[in-house]
Length: 315
Image 1 (tube, rainbow, N blue to C red):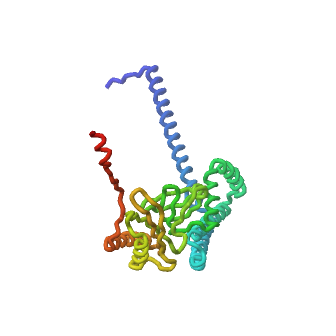
Image 2: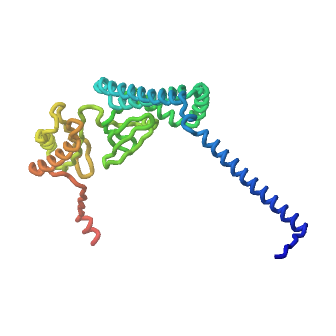
Image 3: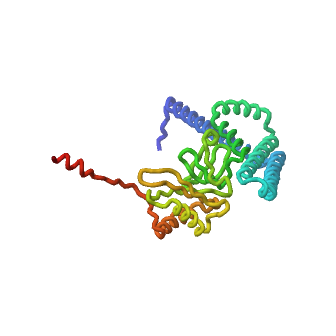
């Protein structure tokens, strides 16, 4: 076999290419090694021994113990407040006390945990003070409602369960809160009324007292015997067991209307019996008047024809 001689320029080019390729691969291997080392160094920072140091574990345990202790104190305080104050304090005030205790608990546990974690509480309180001033200017209506809520509780004008009317809204007081009073209407709708509106408006509390009086207007015909009407109305009240005789029922002559003499029957009853008393009285008036022959008046118009005027017109 013949031996062929490789030209020198080709040999030099091949050798240079080999050196360059070798250097390129070496650089790639070094680069990958550096990345692997960086990854190992990155993940090594998050091992358990670095994160969960003894000091941090102690702070975590102290925080958990503080939360449990404060929660137990809160539950015990709430239990004894409900137990001993329920009979002496009204329900609406008891709810506010419970909310106040809850807010104080949340504030104390938050401040204590921040102290355990080494956070500067003074700086937070300073920032909170500045923020509070700004919020105060922006929330003047809310502050007015809160102050009005304290006035409502202080003067004992409302309590849970009262049936009140304010403007054109009537309902039972469901709750008295810091910002508003919530009513449940007769058709089971929830109405929220701001405390400030209640302070400024005329509020009618129909169930403030234990007893309540109902006035029922009755119109009788002009030819009726008013003495008989009076005696009949007073007598029929004794047939309704829910009507109280002390204070006694009352009959008042109200006015002369176009088609009737208006009479008012006023009866007393316990505040929870309003609907039953009203229905029973109206049905008893209708039945008794029918038996006694007393006419309940209704609008009517009598037309009289003047016969003399008619004859003069035809003549």
